[in-house]
Image (tube, rainbow, N blue to C red; front, side):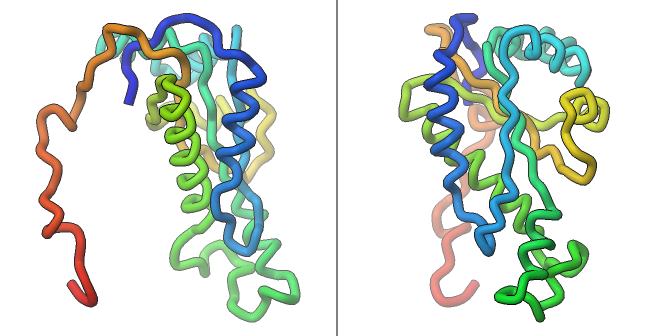
Length: 187
């Protein structure tokens, strides 16, 4: 994850290409309930102010504030419950959100975000996925997001600064051994 960005703008057509490809992640029942809101220009400082994240990043990881793009991945649960109410999917009770043992609207959105992170890396750009912990409802309302949609964090995207170095938990915690996390045939 990148924590030091330059303020160099990102080509809008490149951003659209990245987002269009990222959205091709798996989609349960081809529900296609994943949305991206790309914030650029004045919408970026407004995002930082609305979410109260500006002060924290200014103190802890100031270089993130220079990212010229913030992408908000949005999940639409209704796209899934509506899809699973259709004749070819009906009968499992998944037309009710509470009946999903795993809310695939979140899973599918997370996979689209992973696609985006990999695409950004492949273009030798920088990205940082992070959570939004304050004023999410205000942010979504200000952006005109319909009610019922869910924020699944944010992705800062831009050109990686030359001074960017690995930081955070991966520099202080070892990766778990393969034998601890990969299981064959049973636990």
